[in-house]
Structures are given as structure tokens and as C-alpha cells.
Image (cartoon, rainbow over all chains, first blue to last red; front, side, top):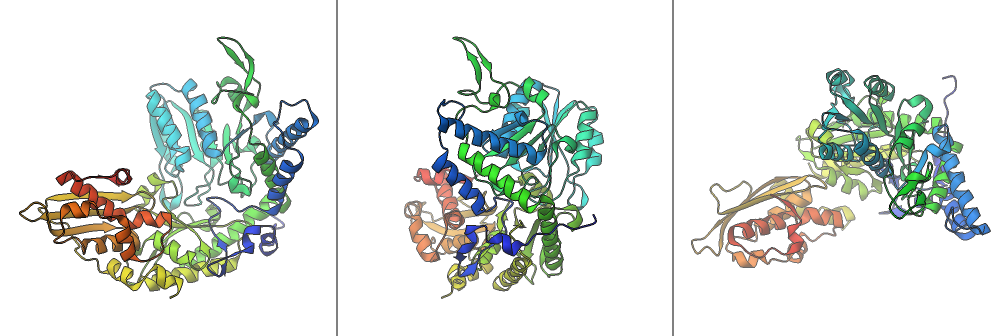
Length: 416
Length: 141
């Protein structure tokens, strides 16, 4: 890399109205973007503008307003297509969130393609969203459900794949970036293994898409799932990308209006992609907002976002790593995204429960996550019931990491 | 009082660091345990009854989790000795929350009343006392 992309987080903060208020008398240090990101004015304005000037139901009205709404929705789809470099916008399916995208494929593809004796392979690092749907579908079918274990240093033990060579693995479901440890998984290797063994590779990219460039034509995945709300877009919209041939071969997931070609008295045929998987009225304004979010992130530059978060995570890991009584989880800085999970102990070695840590930090205007992060299998592996998690985005600053460290010390003193 | 002091009053920290009635009674006449799946709080409570079978003679609890959950359970156990079982089964959560005396968000409310729910389930199981629906959804075994 000849030139490191940069961004000015202090300047970008001005785009986010949420930072105009104080919490407990302090500026908001929002370190929970891995759960959901804050929204820039550009996204909010785009949605308001759509509602005020272009709102009607899409794909139906002959009148100009309906046409305007349809164009806005399809423009958003085209932006999303470009965002992940999909070969065609027909492969972009709008859904409610990444979880719905997983369920769509687990049900529609899984029920049609899995059988008893097959294996569904997830990972021990997975968020429940890419774990429970597969586990449940496997159980329903009588297929085996297994997962790639977490190895040393907070990374998946991909050598364990060798143990599944003869297991009739039909799908490997893996997250691109762990929401809990920040681990960046080797999707190239996972998908190569899957394809070499006759399986498809489903990638939960909810924690990756907001923070790094994704090119589905080189990633190796057959499907990716993304939530809009984590990438400065509105809640209530996300998207599934899938290969045309797989989407064509799958039955629909949700049935109803818009997804049909012809409805007979007894039988119905399905619309083309993407409509086949978009039953009912689309989240139209949300799609417009997602399109604006894509524009916003593209304008800042995903490479700059990734580099910025990496610097913050490395800074936080360095600072917290030197504090007595702070236990860090996950891989070294060069192998993780902008997520830092940790636990806090007093000088006498007593755990300060993450909820207490988070509460003390909240009173200082610092928002972090405390809990199992929807990763109970991972928590069991780590031998903890919960952790604290600080996650960084383009609007976070090194100063907020300093405040985090000071808050942790305060919690240690209070519970000493 | 600063907000810090409000949230973690000295009495809360004292109960958390020095829990009263700590340790399960063995043998006991009633016991139950429960978890708060949100933050992994765990509480187990045991009771011994007087010969009349209607009055609590002794109580002991164990648990781990956040300060609010453990302190609230410790405070609860200080109120139960010599009390009628029927009275405890009907103890409204407001009474305990008043003693805890700090503002609680809905999430932390679940931490604060975990021990109370476990007690009600234990009494319900051993004595058949009423268990209103609001307690039935707790993750208690």
C-alpha cells in the first residue's frame, strides 16, 4: 500500500445529529456500532425527501408518483449492487436484516437441498443469527449440525475442516467478521474447502460490509447477508446477495403479492429475480436510506474506514492490554476488525460484571455492549458468561478510547 | 448525590461485596435457581421452614452476576426470617425495589428482581403458593 487512506472522524461526526446531545452531561462516546450504527443526516434527509416528494407503492402505479417511487427503489438496488460488485442487480434481494437473509436461505435452499445424512457446518464464532437458523433446519430435516471450532488466539481452527471431508457437508455457514471478537475469517479458504467438497458457502457479512470493501465476485461466497442498520443505514432493511443459478433453483421463502408471475386457482408461478424473494410491499424509504448510506460510505471510502477502525482497535488493544485487571479476548490487532472484547477485574482479582462496567461507563457518556453478544456457544468456549465489547466506527476518536480506559479504571476502583 | 453514588449506593456495594445469608442450606425445605439470560446473572435460594410449616426459619443463597442482582438477593434474604410463607409469596416487587432505592432501567430491573422471582418459585414448588404469570416466564429451574 503506497498511500494510507485517511478520514477525519471529528469532521464526520458533524454529519451525525445524535452527537449534538450530551448523555449524563458528557459528549456521547458511542462504542457500540457493532450492534447498530448511528445515522448521518444524509441518510435521514434522503428518506425524508423520498417521503415528501416521491412516496407511493412501487411496481404498481401507472401514475407518475408511483413511477418515481419505483425508480427510487431500483436506484437503491443498483447502488447496493455496486457496493458489493454483484454482476447483476437481480442478485440483490432486499430483506429486513441479515437475520432474515439467513432464514431465507436456510429455509428456501435448506429445505429443498438438505437431507438426512448431510451435514450443516457453522462455526463456533457465529452470531446466533447464522447459527440458530441452520441448527433448526438441520434438526427439522434430520441432518447433522456441526461447527468449526475456535482455535488458539481467537481464530477459527480451519485445519479442523479435514475432519469433515467425508461428512457430506452441504453448506458451510460462516461469518466474515466476528461480532464478538472482531476476528476476520479466511473466507477464501473456507469457501474453497466448501466448493471442493460439494457444499455451498453462506457468509454472514453483517459485521464486514460496514467496515471493509466487499467484492462478491472474488470473495468466494455463494450468498452473503448484510444488515443496513449497521452500515449507517436505517433499521428494517438489509440485503441478501446470492448467485443467480442458486436463487433460480430455490423455491420462494415468503409468499404473497409482487412475487408471482401467474396465480391460478390451484397453482402459482413465481416472478423473476429479485421479485421472487420480495413478497409484499417493499421497505421503500428504508431502501432509499440504504442507498444513501452506500453513497455516504463510498464517499468516505471503505478503505479509509477500515484503516481508521484498525488504528483505533490497535490503540485500544495496546492501552487496555497494559492495564492491570483487564483481560482481552480475540486475535491480535492485525487479524481483527474494530471490535475489542474484554473483562475487568479488581485489584483483588474479582470480576466486575460487564453490566456493572457498562453502567459505570454509561454514567460517563460512554456506550459499550455488555452481555453474550448473541454468541452463547462462543461464551461457553471462552469460559465466561459475558464480556464487555467496545466497537469502533468512522465517527469514533482516540480520545474516546482514552475515556474508555479511564472509565474502566473508575469501575475497578468502585468495586475494589 | 452524584449519579454514580445513586446508582451504586454504598449499601448496594456493601451487600454485593459482603452478601448476607450466603451459602445454600443443606438439607432444606425449598429451593430453586434461576438465570437472567440477558447478562448471565445466576441466583439459587434455599429455605428451611419452622415446624408449623408456615414460617421461614432460615434462608441461604448463592449466585454470581452483576452487583444489582446479587445485592438485591442479599437484601431480600434479610427480610424473610420469621415471615409467613404466604406473605413472602405475595411480596410485591415494589417493596424490594424501594429498599434497593436506585433508578433502574428495564434491563436492570430484571437483574434486581431475579432473586425475588427465584424465591417465589421455590415457595410455589414446595408449598403450592400462588405464582402470578409475571413470574412464570423467568428462566428458573
